[in-house]
Length: 205
Image (tube, rainbow, N blue to C red; front, side, top):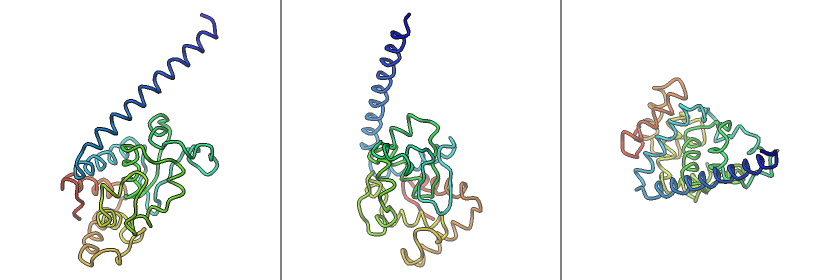
């Protein structure tokens, strides 16, 4: 077989795989969007745990959500309109760092496929949450403002994007108590997600 024919077959095969992958994404989006909000929250919590176990998501304090690949850095501006979900699924070398809300943001993006690298770097998501505003991937329609604040308080211990002023004194105390139970950030985030799963889509510190 000639080299030109081999290249032609590779191109054809690559296009076929791309078509299959896009169809899989479409079907996954459809399935996720058919779920009721509590089931969506459980699905996201389970996915966060899976991403941690697969070493695709590294749990970090004080970090919203960072993608470690140059595709999504300020230096890779030509990639800023690329779908995070499509690129994350295609390139297994891409990994992320982030906090509790950041982990849910990533998983919501991987289900909804509505967030680009530009969205991630241009939006101020903590202010979106504070003001109860729309988020590009619809996370605000899945988790309430109150739930996202409690999740982040329980993860950061009141030193992150939210402090005591954003919730009741009783809920704040419960979140801090939850935080103090886990010395290791990864264990704490997994515990938060398991709490959401156990309570059928609601975080109850």
